Length: 501
Image (tube, rainbow, N blue to C red; front, top):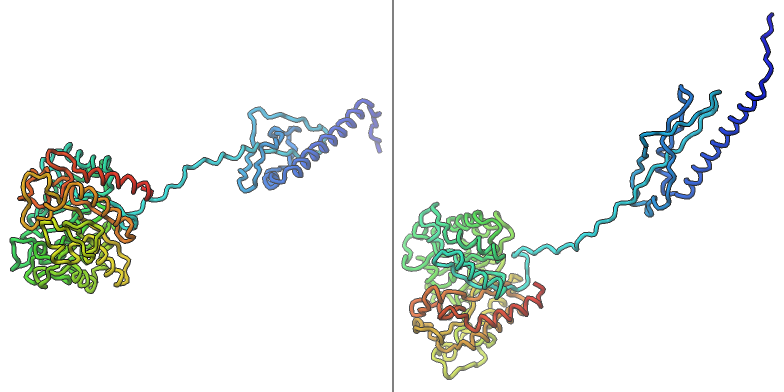
């Protein structure tokens, strides 16, 4: 057998192999030490590191391409594990090639240390604003005023009215009467000219709107009714449908609807069956259901009653007795607020009817010679509240008209029956209006107080002999604001600060 040729060992070659083995061992130990140091020094990154450590396999070319070894900086590690970002290894375009031993030495596992971006800064958010309550959910007292639309249909004139209300008086609400017979003179034929005129301007000034919807058109009236007076519709659904059309035309712009007006007297409810609370609830129910089906946030107000001591059960019913009849007929189930009109006559707002108050100089003697709750602002309001509470309800009251008539500065006399306006002075009006507002605000049961009125005076040429609303107007002859304008403005300023509006 031929023996293999045995070459002598080259000392230089042997020395090179020994050096390569030692260098490989040192490299492996340094890598292991680096890994263990990071692993134990930063426990937050262990899960991330465990997922990205890959053993390096020898390449066929005798070398390995790896990502760069990135030193982990302590400041780059999140301080709280709950906000730990995901670990994403970074690579560079020009990777460093590390030569491996040509004689098949063991490849060293490389640790890909990720670059940890600092956690994103938590944005500083503005304080969470408390949502503005819907009118139907708000319980704090708010004031407003009846504003008649500009008969000229001049937008600047209407802006002047609303600017005074919103920017000077700073009252949040305006009331507008919607005369159904003018808006739908024929079934299904609508004239929206008035509301189309006032609504955009009310929105422009950020005013809340309460519509009082009244007066059925002739086509909708009951057969046999007195057509010389205002009366209810034969079919209550016709009224409900009209209110629905109103809400759909101005979505989100109407905050409250008052369903009818002073239905306890035949001047406003002329029916062959006379004034009747049960008939009114038949009108109220479908209207309430229509309103809530379109916009549940709209506040539904029971039509305000006329304070009266006259009661023959047909032409008129005492407002306290009518309140009892409304409650018995279920009216409180179909409304959010109980409407009220409070005509101060010639008595101060805080005086009850049975306190023996007397003004010996008064021309109008009703409150003094024939005492009755209906003469007294306070007694009437307290009487409604007591009846509502006795029925087990916490329904608030919406005073959709209140005021004191004054004839002192008018060029004409007042209409018969309004002689009390002669007894009241401008100074008394200026004193009594904020007193009434303060009483309502402190009552705990009044939701709205609507001043009657802003501008009927100039619209009627201040002729109180033809228009009984003139004497209540805050705009006096010559377009001068009456003193009550200033005292209402001052009251609202103080109240807004106190109530947090």
